[in-house]
Image 1 (tube, rainbow, N blue to C red):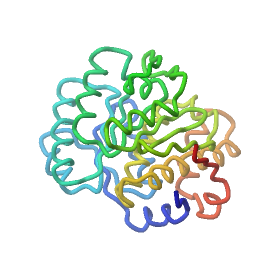
Image 2: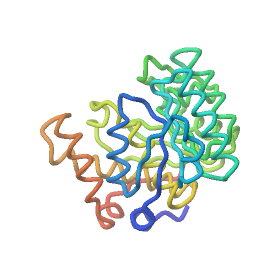
Image 3: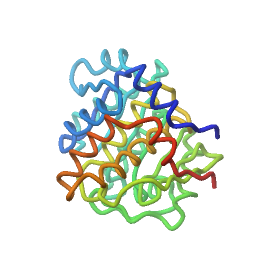
Length: 262
């Protein structure tokens, strides 16, 4: 894999992709701000103009964190329009495996040709069929998360990423691990949702690929490392994370990136 994260960062900032979101109401403002700081332009539409907005967008992000019948119907319309137009779609199956409804909705949306499925280790383990533990939106993971991402990517014909202390992602053939990040990411609600927004920026500007997903995850995790050095706890970390994503330099990104093809 030819991976130079600085090139992707500069492309996102230059392109400024319009990223359409249907996301959860717990983190919607955080996702919008992170999208801006990552180099994108967010729009959060889940109403009557959702099809028209998806048609204008560079990518669409579907996050089922606070799903209900109305938003599920909107997600179906958004996914159908994105698929028909070849617009990259990122699915974040929050809490898949915690309840039958979440698993059912995740399975339905996985059948609508997402470009990227990005979840935590437990969600990806459940959806791959290899097993995982999900309680609420927290994850226990499967025993072999690398095989879970590879298997799900192969079965669904897309890129699959699982976030955790070590992040793994695959296109069904190659599996890559990423070792950047901060433990404080787990102490702030919504950092996984924010990551999906960053992935939306990168696939919207650079196209859906192993490199663009790797660039998105690396960018947020390097920003988290820098933010950890500037904060005094979870509250100030969240503010510093936005600041560090906005000011992230190509040099810091290239010098800090830690990735390995397995």
